[in-house]
Image (cartoon, rainbow, N blue to C red; front, top):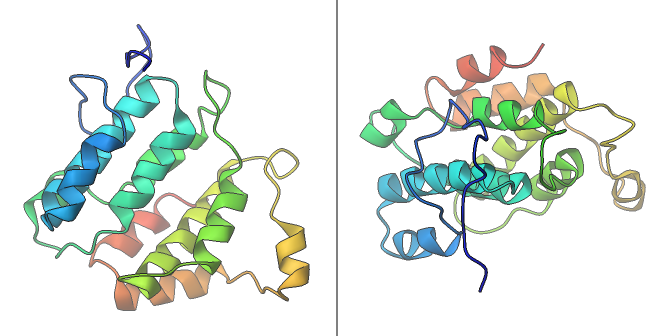
Length: 185
């Protein structure tokens, strides 16, 4: 098993908690099972930071997906300390030229939004659409295209930013839409 370590000198994401030591996704799994959503949320954010620092941006984004899947109350201390990680997503997108594989976040969030299942399915789907729109607003379309095959084969209509904000206003956190509106040009 390879030794986990942070890349020396790599800039940490200012929108995520400090990761004192290198972590892997397995570090957060037990917290998910224990149903302590606040602890799991913080662990996923910290793990995302660690994965970013290890040069694994795609895995960091997956941990941010896990954090966004948690349905915390607006007054939860974890959420008050670390708002929903949309700013962290955008920060990682803007550093796409740094070390590590990022994949295609536009395609990833398109698939995530349209194939959501499990608890909080509707809220998680709308959050994935928000991430999709943020990715499209930051990443160049020629390098990070939509999945046109899925759009054609499934007769998929990409939902608008406005509809996404409207649904998140109904389903999401009190400050979620305000945070998102401040991020998309």
